[in-house]
Image (cartoon, rainbow, N blue to C red; front, top):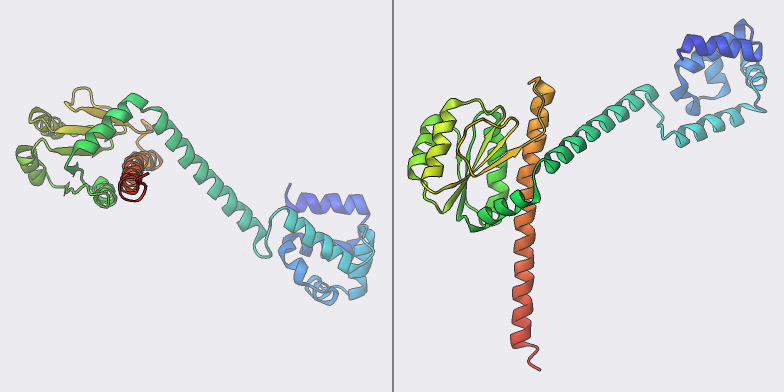
Length: 277
């Protein structure tokens, strides 16, 4: 309901006159100011007298102006509104909720698309790899650098190959003790088919994280993220959210394993040296 419609309803419900209408119109347009206004303040802003404000308050069912202000304040708290731009706060909150919902949905869809057996195989390959290298370009290279950085902290060194020359050299030189992760949003780069096939032929485990599975790329693992065929900016963001979820999951699984391993080692030391009986 618009302010105009609400004002009309107030006029009819309470039998308001022209002076009352001026007060009500100002209040509807500036409701967020009300908790900080006194009777004279509202009268001045509405171009009416203080007594007119008092009569208006009583017409709409309140005993006093403080009681009226208290009700406004309580309703704001109930609706979790702050003094300030109410409408903007509501819009911002709604937008944040929509963003959170989209991120959650993308993550869930990506998670559901990866069978547990495949995750187990990927984790085993990651565990065995001495080095984890990344094939990516453009924005994906930034995501790859993020992945390399967090996995490096777990003892998994690596390098991001973001140019074609470096990618081609890597496919010829990287030994089978490495694990290669390729990030390709659309899976449309024909040169990558030969590139990843060369890694595969040399015994290097390869995982492709993509929004659209290529028809005939020779890789060991394909992880498809949530992605729309519309290929617009929102769809691209879905891909990045999904790809980051995959990278974060790899980190947390390896992190937890490392943590559990350290705990077992500590328990073994305690049992050998401090708990002999």
